Length: 42
Image (cartoon, helix red, strand yellow):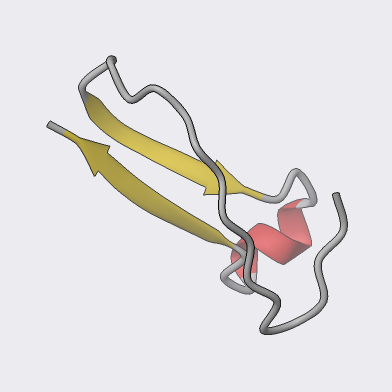
């Protein structure tokens, strides 16, 4: 899925594996410019 800047999506999933999880772009230059985030499942 391609998103434009400031686009917002909703997703639903079962969060049954505790820990810190990273969402990121697979293009290294994009990762370096901040196209990633981390969420925590407790």
